[in-house]
Length: 215
Image 1 (cartoon, one colour):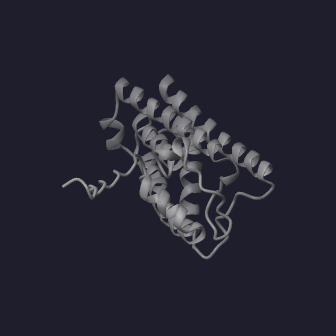
Image 2: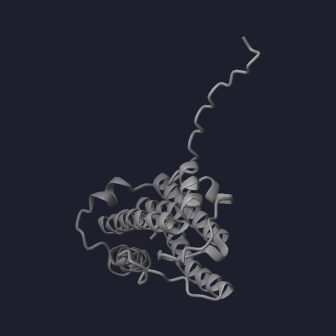
Image 3: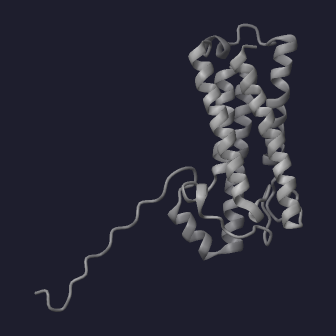
């Protein structure tokens, strides 16, 4: 592994450790568990499994590569994304994604949850990074894994990234239903104002008002 590849791998490991540590800190501050995958009416078994697979793979797969090499002979991704510029781009995405995800997680404070369950969703956080994205933690994680595919290209890493992106898509749909049912109109207004991934919705044009003495 090159220096850039090692740096990207270490950043991913630091992110996983920091994610777990911060979750424990936020749970202690809130005085309750933040793990909700096994609660509520929504079935979250599949996204929970995919999340665990993706993050465990992100930690273990590069170690396998370093120790035994790529078991896929003539891996097309390894050849297609080989080069220093790909390493730089991938590393930047890993760093940006990890930092964005961690900062957004910390910004949630007492509202931080892993999974979703009715009646346990916490208050809406709609400022800071959440004023630009309804899911900045997931957005950062997605960037991190896309960066890993670029800097450590292989079919296995691509499969891990697809697992994460599928988990995010499934979980976001679940959380949107739970939040709408639990928080009602305030969440629906926030949902209409801020986009799922990035950006704010365009405000509807105001109807022109005509005063009685304008004609």
